[in-house]
Amino acid sequence: MHFRPGGIGRYVLPPVTLALGPRASAVRGGETTLAVACGEPSGCRGVLRLGVVGRRDGVKRYRTEAKGSYDLAPGEVKRVRVRFFRKIVESLREAGTYPFYVEAVAGPAGKIQARRGRIVLALGGRLDGT
Image: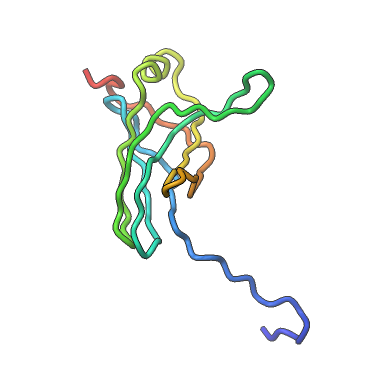
């Protein structure tokens, strides 16, 4: 395919600095795992958060319900363990599952580096690890 002068050229995607996998493992023992890949030349370090989006006083808010930290070398792909808060494990047992949203927070300012929307978690075995 040839491009004419003055036309629109090819769009080149920027390099990926941090990527999140499309699925989480089943929730067992109050935790799940998610794949995280690092594309930064200096490595990636931060916190992975699972949460739900809801409304409070008419304002859309993100509520963190599980967290896990990661420290990856450049080019490394790793499954990161994310632990749910105890109250959330109890509500998962009662209500079943609902969609979660994933955010990877990194850097000195706590800036969100990557997001993945609507992951529905599978519930497996014993949720509370007892």
